[in-house]
Image (tube, rainbow, N blue to C red; front, top):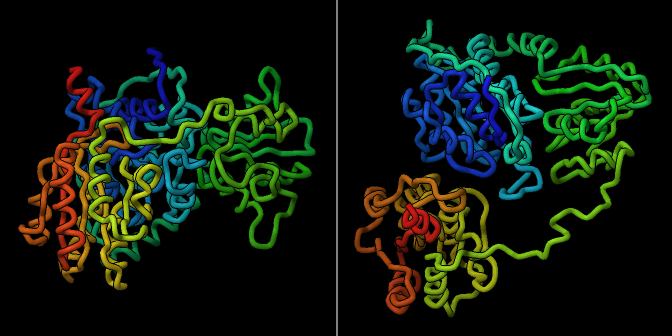
Length: 530
């Protein structure tokens, strides 16, 4: 059998290809981006015709994958944790419709917020939607779980979540590949009403989902990914989920963990194994990367039957990602006092790349608004968010995808003049078009400044569906054509750019769009090398 050295993301991708998916749907977002990129580059993607184009956002990706499942074929949909918020409508309702072809939703959480706005734990979404969740502890399990999860999805007729975290997604290990499975043929549900969520159908489907909960727990009890291991020292029992299990094994490298141990990588929690561990130990330590998900369920609203320690008690840090050093120190197997590499290296704050078109865009905008106090520019998520830092100090908000336009509109509704929204081309097509439609409907006096670098730059330069279409999109939404303006963000165009921005931001009392169009310096360099 072939062995490959793979990132966790790549193991997910290869596992999906070998499990016979017919399509992958995603929107780029660290730490999940490499899943789709690996599938796009894989030889079998081309030879088999596996769908591998980026979607406009996570909601459309989720619904497109559900459509492929409806047609009988296996599909993978990938996103980062905050992307699941965008996909939540289709995600939660897919548990009610159920599936036909296998459907796995891989969500990459980002504890410590290395490149994210929050630390949310996606296991809560799986529990909320009442669907099974898989959480691999290493790259081999990430690979193996795709075939397992897709088959389980088809057996139980429900979508399955796979939850990974940053360290698993972006670390490498050897992965032994299995036999590649053929793709499914087309099929349709026996009862197409399952996918018609009129109240009468939805109630029937929801009853059926509730009835399956006992089956999900029974599957977790016998899952090859959940394991209860006895230990002689019952003063402490340990529950380790996902990558935290790997950290525990590292803490006892060269030795056997002396405590009873429950490894959890499939949810709902295996209640019989859990009860056996808790009943046999004096207290329980919960190791999990992310929020205190298992720990909170053990404690309950009335407190635990046995002492439970972990993130909620301060034995482990309440925020941030888990690490081998933290786990080892907790178990007196080592110290986490040694300085992390980040503390030994001089800190260099992030900045826009030399030659980035956003530099010229911000300089022109700041000069056009030189009499306006700080706080009138609402930004969004992308490379241009670095405009919040020196030397620009140009923006005052960054909340979620598309919020720049929504918040600028709300501020203008409150009487703020001027109110400017800064948004990138990819973010605009992701979530910016609908709030722009609100502004068109009311002719809200805001200026939307679209920084169009022709790519999804922050996640590595993926294609943007907005490329070459922004004027048509804005005009189609209803922005007056005479107030859709172009600027060329180059130093030699600075005075002209300032004039255009001043006309639309400072002098025009109405809705306008200014598009700053120049290719990302990084994608330009790569294309020149090619």
